Length: 128
Image (cartoon, rainbow, N blue to C red; front, side, top):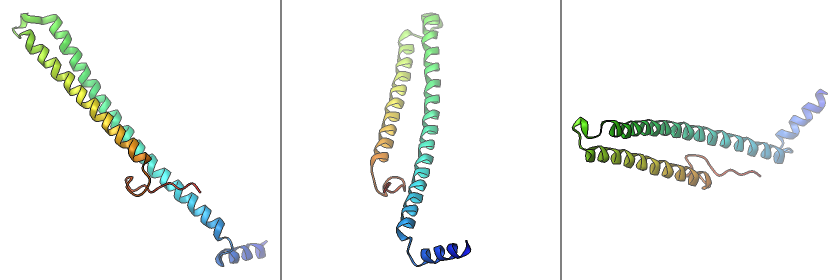
């Protein structure tokens, strides 16, 4: 009843439930950290999707260039060497983007494994 609730609240105010409250506080802190990590992960996924879409567009352009070389060849007055150089530049850009994406992925993986405040404001997760 009401007396039991009052006594329970009084006991809590006097610190009788300190251990249980500490555990709840720790769990709440963990949930907040998971939420921050989730937001960071979502931002990373969205950024990666945008980069992949850009790379897809570059691949489509590269496919079109290769097809143009096959169809037009020397007839258009553009030497085959120019077409090859253009295609090589496109491939080089794609490789640079791929390497960049790998670097970002590795950096995110490293950040997610490093404990402490250096992880974009996310402190070490303590599951105790």
